[in-house]
Amino acid sequence: MEDKKYLIYHGLKCPKENHTLESLKYFENFQIDVLDLFCISYPKSGTTWMQEIIPLLLNGGDLTPVESIPNWERVPWLEETRAVLFLDKLSAPRTMVSHMPYPLMPPTFSSSKAKAIYIARNPKDVLVSSFYFHQMASFLDDPGTFEEFMDKFLAGQVLFGKWTDHVKSWRNTDLGDRIFYITYEELIQDLRGALERMLRFLGRQMSEEALDRVTEHCLFKNMKKNNMSNYSLVPQEVMDSSKSHFLRKGIAGDWKNHFSPELEDKFNAVIQKELEGSGINFPWD
Ligand code: A3P
View 1: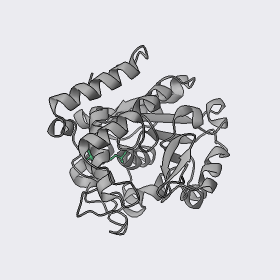
View 2: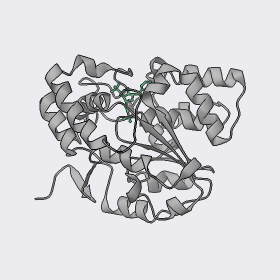
View 3: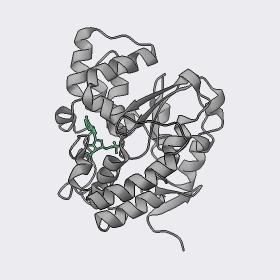
View 4: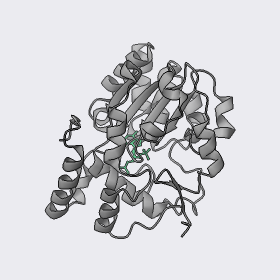
């Protein structure tokens, strides 16, 4: 039976609200440019944060674009319907985000010289963030109870499939030093230090003063006030901020307020088993 809210793309759920067969074709056939930069994330891992950070690192810390252009237009999702509208307007290096696992990236990506930044987040906090997102976004299924939603998450019956498949696919690439890994937790712990590391990866420099300005601007409390990034431009019937804000809590460890010891055991058992032998060690392990 056809799903009302989702397109199924290579087994992955993509919301029909912003994905069509045409937008996915556009994604598949996209011609990568040597200067292109991708920020890759599993949903709810800090994508919006990176859509704020990366343009500022690339432009020397000028706040004008992030205060005047909505995040989905300044750093578009390559697989979404809006990509075709906005990508032509971007100047090099074009910066895009994507939630796709590595094997589904456009064929020219791996052989190109394009760079990627992969942001990962503790999957327990991803789950909590996604649970609230499903309550406020009318284009997503009602999540049910927290435990019901956890079961769907662990089974990969959620947006863009299993979290473990996503991180494993991006940890095992042939991109060498063209990919930079960062975690949401590192950004929370030392935002300025993380920005410095990203600058080095991007081959950019910034004055101390500009770096201070960017760091301050990208703090949760300040980004929450930026109407170009807090999704307040989206109509209430699409994202209902009376149920939950898109920029909701912005912390690491909110899972502790949602997981019972039993749920934690169940979650750990599945995630640990699926990461076994992958060589992946995250700071929250
Ligand atoms: P919470 O729901 O836990 O608050 P994505 O952009 O990938 O959908 O991820 C959204 C999550 O990133 C939300 O998590 C949101 O609050 C958080 N986030 C966005 N900007 C942030 C910032 N500047 N500082 C901390 N967290 C941020």
